[in-house]
Image (cartoon, rainbow, N blue to C red):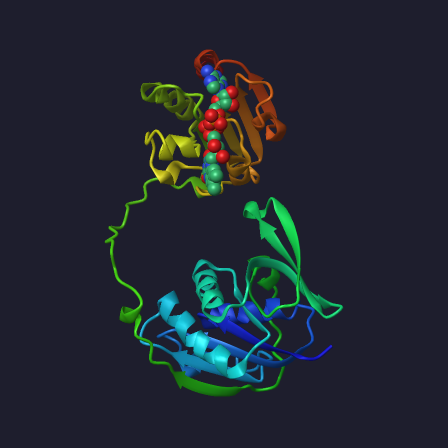
Length: 319
Ligand code: FAD
């Protein structure tokens, strides 16, 4: 199989080290390997830390700003020059955005969150995470690709190769104002809830039928000394809670010691967000609710009867 040209991209020197560690686990026959590092703060002193990372060239791309749009335009120019078979970067939010933008510009399919990449019978085979990590998808492609590597691939310390890369400084003149307009102004939201680090969470869903009944949930959270979370409809449809309390695929992924799901059906998009919870207690009046498939303890019944009893019994137990 012919040797492949690889373009690796990193937005920081730290990411470049992790990226190279992940790249070493990829089973493809690499010929030319070029690492591109961008960022207004990157200087040649920092690059010295990675000059023996194992690539033949390191290009420091200087752009006027650090927007994903600008960087992807700069990378497009580099791709046209070196014509890589694969463009590979880390799966962090910024680089994933760069990957998506670049993929459209150069018309390479984009595979994010890859867990493994290898070549077999002239084709590339990829395993990638889907639905927030619930399943792994296996793909086969014969095309040139843009890929981002899952952070677990990139966690090993990087051993330097001993061979110093050629360092090339490139200035790319990209004018972001030609392609983008600011149409919204975002005010920073003061974050008061930290569900990600909460040890205990009492979460509620559409089983709570009126806004004033959230008081029941608050009482249970108080006696358990827990934070309050909720399902998406509580935020999106009812607007009873802010998005910072939403648990799930498009909310926060949590890993508390105790997660109490009150009147939550446990659809996959919610279940993904609590898969790392140590103990899940579910209260639901439908014995067939999917939440019981993942709960450690299940109480089938009306939350309006069960929650007050639970609050009293915890209070009595404490007393
Ligand atoms: P329902 O599904 O309506 O469930 C209510 C439950 O309450 C039922 O099981 C019912 O039996 C029970 N119940 C009713 N009355 C009582 C009572 N008196 N006592 C006890 N139990 C009672 N959802 C999320 O939560 N988080 C996400 O991040 C998220 N992301 C999404 C992303 C996408 C792209 C999509 C398409 C959907 C997403 N959803 C998300 C929505 C998800 O699919 C479900 O629609 C949602 O989780 C359901 O919320 P729920 O369990 O509160 O409501």
